[in-house]
Picture 1 (cartoon, rainbow, N blue to C red):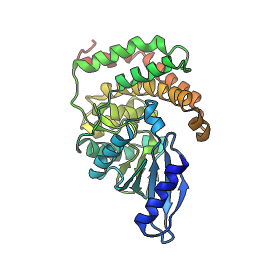
Picture 2 (picture 1 turned 90 degrees about the vertical axis):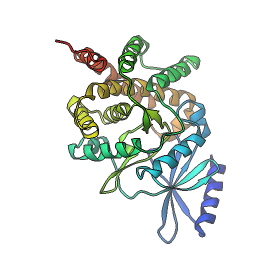
Picture 3 (picture 1 turned 30 degrees about the vertical axis):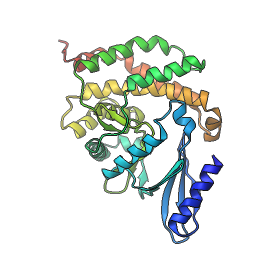
Picture 4 (picture 1 turned 90 degrees about the horizontal axis):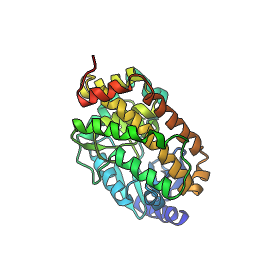
Length: 308
């Protein structure tokens, strides 16, 4: 996307009233993320959006991603949107520490993460809706249509997806504006609070999925998931719902990596990232939890039935 990037930098220079330089940042597996600087020390973040990503089912339409990014910024959780450009968006540069899985597992970080989620979830509704169950169906359809590689035994696990969805539907939760892709790298701690970036998969959703997705990405155990649940909801009552969504996160994002590797091979090569290994790792975590003796109790708890 050199033409988009070049044009965006020209527009940013005009907006800033002086020349800018840019440095590509590591970590973005889909869009280009660049730090833009002036000689006077001003810094911003330029997010150059690739239409092939949303076309492949790996993100929401780009115009709606920008709408949601603006709405998230209004809550104070997302980065402020400074300039909308053709195919790109210029964002506030957040000074802080980009979290990793170890940091997100730190008990002291749970209240900060929960508070960031609550602030985002209490903001204006997003322009899109999201269901992890529909996303799994969409990604699986792409894998089948394009004969993409998925982990062996994956389709044997599909009946349990319907079981989990039925349990969730027994007592559905009101939807709120959710990020839906809270891997640790999308969380930045500025010393006072956690900020949330990258709204590629954002949409109105069950807030318990947000927590389950965090738990999946940081590889929480049941105790950690309960701690985050309590920090967000005030008690651990919805913990079983969060843990089932943890499983659904791992199952569904297994296919995200399969689709990305299969349909955006050029991007995958440039990212220097092993998509097949990541898909296999997520599926292994999902099967571990599905085969756990306590899985049935999670289903019963979410349905509102208690086992003796």
